[in-house]
Image 1: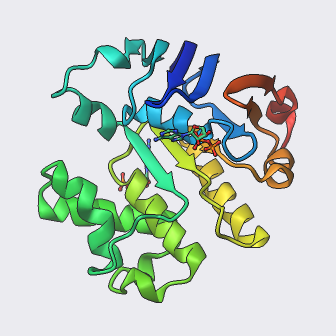
Image 2 (image 1 turned 60 degrees about the vertical axis):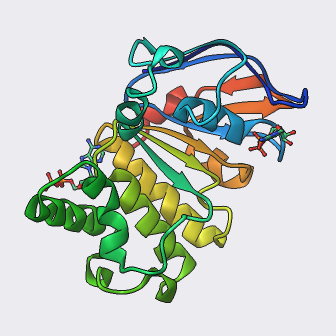
Image 3 (image 1 turned 90 degrees about the horizontal axis):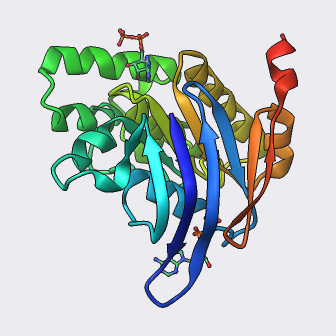
Length: 228
Ligand code: ADP
Ligand code: ADP
């Protein structure tokens, strides 16, 4: 599903944020990406979204070299990828419903089908009763759930999250991770950047660790499949 081959990234100015990173993720995998602040986690996700160009190596997604996508293919590529941000990036001049429907409007969905999908997504994150509210009136955990509903509403095959629990207390953080596990169980491939080691080690998924741009550890959790 996702393959990095010897990927390096040097930002203008000379800083090498990723150094010869190689790994592979299969369809339906759930993988955490960890490492200290500045280790290169966000950079890796940005390369995958094609919001930053890579300097060396290649990234294959579904067998396609994403650096060879032409400018007009990139929006189509991005639609297959849902993204959840730490600060959720919600719009506070409109309702929860209107935030979540945005990706579908961009895709040109007919109103009724869009509304049906928005409600299905809000139902999945447990916020069906809040669709008319302004997100500013919601708690931090609820706002993050709106961000997740918006990220999944057009049914991406891949969901990326960059420190999605960074602003949440431990209990809410665990709930958000549990929600990600539910999307993973319906087949969505998940790559989640988080520096919260105590939380992610408890969840028993594969963990990739970056240190100063290098992938220094790739820890599998094969026991996961035997767990109830
Ligand atoms: P993390 O997400 O693990 O905190 P980042 O990927 O944000 O790490 O950053 C990795 C390194 O790249 C850091 O040293 C950071 O300062 C640098 N960096 C990130 N973005 C830029 C940028 N746009 N221009 C120059 N350097 C950057
Ligand atoms: P419906 O088919 O009525 O849209 P589902 O129960 O299949 O309802 O899905 C509800 C919501 O869950 C979807 O709107 C979407 O947000 C999310 N979802 C379902 N399947 C997937 C999938 N394969 N990938 C990503 N998100 C999905």
